[in-house]
Image (cartoon, rainbow, N blue to C red):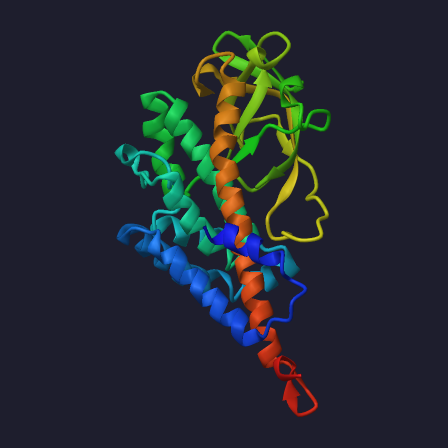
Length: 308
């Protein structure tokens, strides 16, 4: 509702609007949004909003300037249940709905968008393992994901395959008790910092049906990383290429069955897109709040900009 109202309102942007009416409108939007939330969802929102205001917003500009990735803050977020939001409670997940998660992500992103965006990727990986992993995989990995003792990254995009993800060329050949993995992935959020990488790779023939999903650990021999990408923003979130050179991945690290990787990757993105949409909305909401405050804070001669 909030995003629809804002977009609708933008059509009359040429009409003069005072900062006071903008503030009133923003407050009204908040009340309208509140009316659609359950008591639990309002609690989630308030918890995330408080965390963002206290732990994210005061440091976001400095983190971006210095490229600092706040692992300690992510650990704090996990203590609030934000490390495995969509995983089932059986192994330590929080068991939230996608709507619950979007509410939380929107508030966190208002504090630091890039840190929150990484958190959504970690949650996507956690959900994929929880949904498609074996009971043994879930019991081993979900508690670590939930506590963010293990950070995770999603590896689909390659230098030669982006939108046409089914044409990926990273290949894994089964040899005894291992898959031998070769290839590379590009623009990987958390690259070089994350402990675990969910890698979509080709174990069969051409097309989507030949793709599988392997859980690859950072410390496996043959895993290496490129330099951090030079970005205009989100500089505190590490982003780089990941290389696989004859990496021996135990067959027990396959998530789902052989040939299920593309389906798993797309289902992961179905939820991930909701989260990144909420993340963008949180950033826009914070930007709007700054824009509303600015005319009353900025003075020219003897009057504020709002009163010119």
